[in-house]
Image (tube, rainbow over all chains, first blue to last red; front, side, top):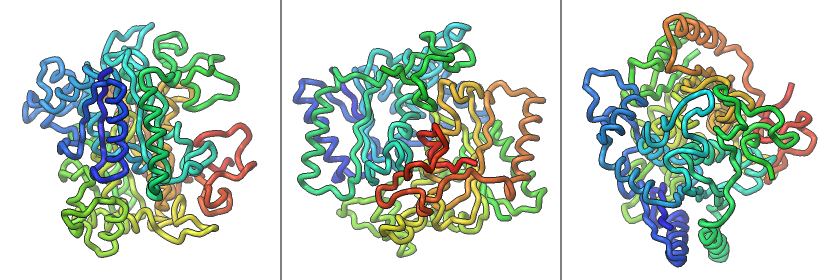
Length: 261
Length: 261
């Protein structure tokens, strides 16, 4: 497979840097082709603004979606954004690697999503009708590809457990797994999450690295999270609410959007 | 009261710009003092990197939390960050206003959090012991103050309802309300969320503005979300899991962390 790893940590000599090297080596050992976008090292522009849309007249009001659609359609997005879109089209699998900062991805990676996910590329794709509300949530430009998160967290695993004070990690990552990866079509593998990373010693690192190598070996074959297709019949359109009786007994919240086994 | 509104939209002539003006006018009409941080207009630096820590030697490895702690302790954070911290200390209430982009806040606002929320200021505060796991989640530097989100979304309210495909809006905003606002001590009011904002006409805007004025009048008095204090006895320390039997029947996920009435 072709694999793109987007790396969002400011320090190469960090645990994140070491885990990236482990992941890349494990993937290459499997025969995969790997490319890395190192956002900090490349000085990625994190903020969406007028400079992203060179065709916009100086006095014209910036409407982000409309400007994005026009620039994508005209092939007029900036070169850095077009290069990332080409990598996403090239890659059969995408890995987003980041430290969990304030319960979400770092700003630089959020800005990668906001800029690379153009209208017509990652959203605003496909027909809108009474039966089909755009190609999204399981359909779209990136359908047929796989994606997963590789996350480090300072807190303990218990703090992110079902009853942990931070909230369950799967729920904290749902807006990313479902709203950013499943949205444009990716099949999303369960996240790899390393906890309590500030206290990791040598044997602890080696155990973690071995676990990560296992996940990298399974990247092409592991079962994805069974998120529901938006246009597959489970949701009423256009209200996009889950039809009654589709869920497992007692399910609520984000868990409604997974097909239970 | 003193009120700080942090505004994260690139276009002043937007619905967000109009709603900001409505909010500020309504607050001033109540006699409040209002300051606005306009992140795009001020060219806010969105990314945490070495430049944030001028005291860090060029060859030294960047450990973000340690560097943040040292710089905060020494009063050596950059001037833009110190100015925002002073505004947070001045303000009795904080409003974060933003369009919901990819189910979270824009990168520029996430970067405001990452840079302004220094170690020793917003985290790493207070004692860690078997009875008290830092001053956080209801305690901390900003305890006694109020905060709320003012959010616009392109989708329909139904799409963000209990069974909506995006997930419930309260769950999507939990990592911000609980993890970013309640964490350093704020009492968090329910978010004001405007839906389907791309289709708003004149009467629709006026109705929305009137609703927003009502929320601004209630900023000092409306009941906050009843998030549980971390160190108040509901959680076992240090595992920080909610003790059995504290929750309402059937509650799970993020809802566990609210005291039910």
